[in-house]
Image: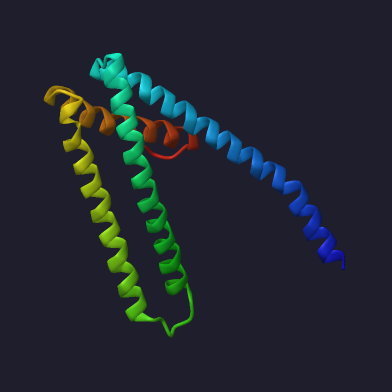
Length: 155
């Protein structure tokens, strides 16, 4: 009985902290996204019409990628369960999940390619090139900042 009360109290006090952590994470993600939008508009020198069309298409693309990433994460969790389990591992199931995971990664890259190629009616070839360079540099810079914040080496 004491254990149940102790566990209940721990959960009661840890839930607000977890909720606060999630809110802070969402706020940080939102700020990063806003910064990225501003920098993109500036870097690509987008006019208002281009901005509206570009970000609408980009948001649609990101939703598709997010669905694939969620499935990819599910598969990774399933693979972890299979590899962390007892010695009678189901090799066929591991192979099936691994194949599905790799297929999803290919789909993600294909969707990214389709997105970039689809921008020709909104952006000039130079702007598309700047976009690709910008995205890579922006991700690298955010990664460096986060690693520095966590005290990890930068690579």
